[in-house]
Length: 106
View (tube, rainbow, N blue to C red):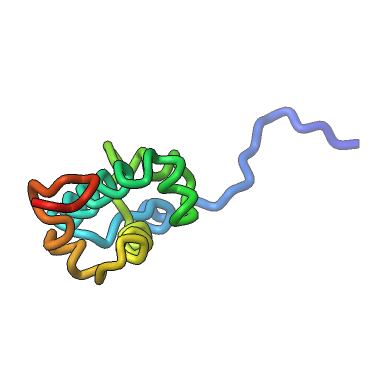
């Protein structure tokens, strides 16, 4: 029977760009998606309710709301929930700046 005397790692090295995923959104689009996320979170009553509505883990939404860059997939799901075109959300036309997060009035 063979006994290993030295620790060996059996994995392939991958390029950094293959293992790390970056967002497809510009910084301005990310800010607009974050604003929409906060409005929808307020309307539905919290991250957990919003997560159930768009079928995404609540921890993912919390990270997108604070420090992690929102993904295009989350932006698409949020726009479907809000009933607006994804382009309106990405450009910042929805929600309107300064509008009430509960009723949407300006």
